[in-house]
Image (cartoon, rainbow, N blue to C red; front, top):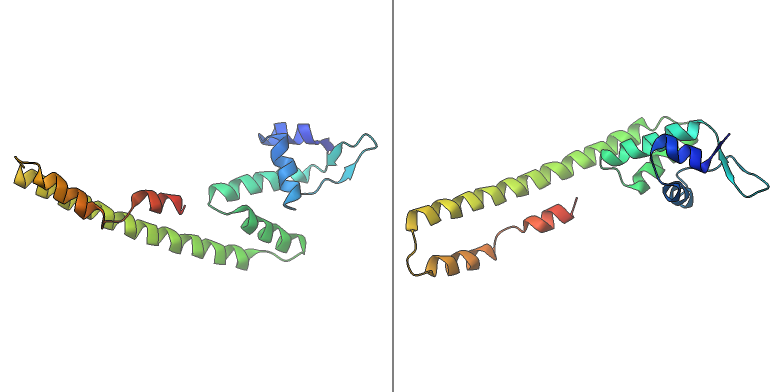
Length: 144
């Protein structure tokens, strides 16, 4: 059995992160000692590594909890993981399309700017008015 600090050090996460994962029911301590310390089985290390890897793939903690719950019930979570991955891919494809549209608009503005060489600044005002109708890149980034 391993203490929470030992697990945290081996996995490279903060003790507070492990406690937070407990509140979300992503992991559970095996036992608590009379001293109140949490003790974990060695396989908790693999669970925490899975959680970290799943997060790098874009899975939310709720999605990870769903996967771990299905797995804990003795059912391979393959179908659920496949569905979640397909959703992630579809979302990324939509964001890529939005970014490509935004890039094309920026290139168009750049090309127009280079052709007009404004002398009175009207093009700057026109550009700022037109920009109000273009996709908001920061909104796209916030969706991630």
